[in-house]
Length: 425
Image (tube, rainbow, N blue to C red):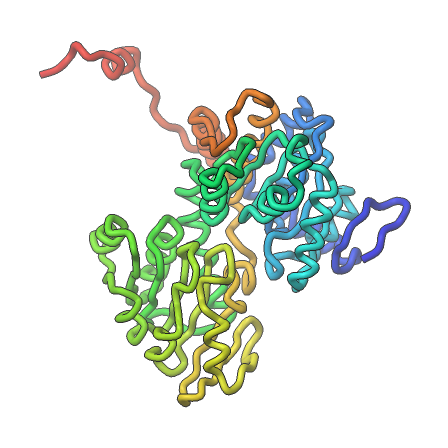
């Protein structure tokens, strides 16, 4: 974890892992044709020349392609981890050794190290921040107000981060533009639903090797992530129960064929619990008290606060690791509860995160959102901004093109009809 005269400053696990990381990055690139096309254009146009950029993301093979594309566009970029258990150490090593991108991330870093890396990122005095959970932006707003003058804007692709940005805006603290990448159609329809759906179950299966068919699986939250998890769990033969606080989403879950219960009732019925709400303490002491012996709980929301692990720990006579990423809490009442991935994102703690094919669209949105901020420097009002519809559609078009799929176009007659009010019955 040192620096040499021929390397940028960095803090990674082991640079000797770089060849393995390069091979895995190349494999992921096979399924990321949209971002590859954007990178090639960036390399020609250099939209980020002279721009200092900080990215706080899960350091995975897919994120590597985003970082490489931004550097190809001329960005002076620094990459830090957004989660202590999601960093792929071989990828971090490759980005440093082969691409000279400063990376400050290693799997298992503690909270103090994470906070120090956030400070290192802010020391870069970024013009653009790519955030995943809004930790870097929050630190900037709280502790580095004098640096806001350097900032062109930020991008955010998590539901949790968008909630935090809206709260900042409501408190009058979001005094710069923020691009809401999370709500782009080519992000949340695919990344949240298909990515989270598949990768969450992948993490659970890798951590436990249990058969999901026939299990009662409780999915807390029926947003796009919850929909994906519930659909994939049902596809594997699970009996899925959904818990919700939003009546409209609850009705949707019912119409989609799922049982909907409050957590107070679902807690005694579930074999496996998956939280995907973005909120705090969705599973609490009163729920632990009535769970089955051996019930498993895990989280696929951004932060590790959805399961009240502190209260669970207080109820435990013993905590031991029974498998990698799998801890058994032996309770004083004689029952046990199994926690996967330490309550952090189970798809990244115990698996490899979303498949490359969906991250291709998500990171295409991130790259083009950064370009949009630069092109519109000084023109955007403070607050959240949506990805322009034309950008969203272009990403979808490029994805279809790469998949070899053609679609219809409007005829002149159809175009005239949908733009007219005079035709009717």
